[in-house]
Length: 99
Image (cartoon, rainbow, N blue to C red):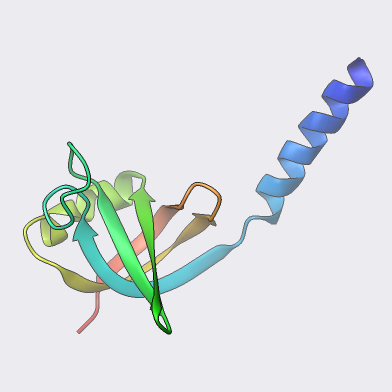
């Protein structure tokens, strides 16, 4: 049993250590105000790849501090952080509007 717990802990640590920081450029929007898909405000970035669009929720204090910039209007943004594709979230370390 201890071996199973140790293996599970090692696997969790390994996947966290392998997470890489990525930079995405796309449309910064509010999930509630712009997309009408939530009851509370939440920053998202929509990234186009050919004819497909991926939407990632932006998390963390850096994202929250930027919310006023995109709550009432959509802006092109460049976002850097750790991407969790499984949950569709990006833990933001840097975000800025792109001109």
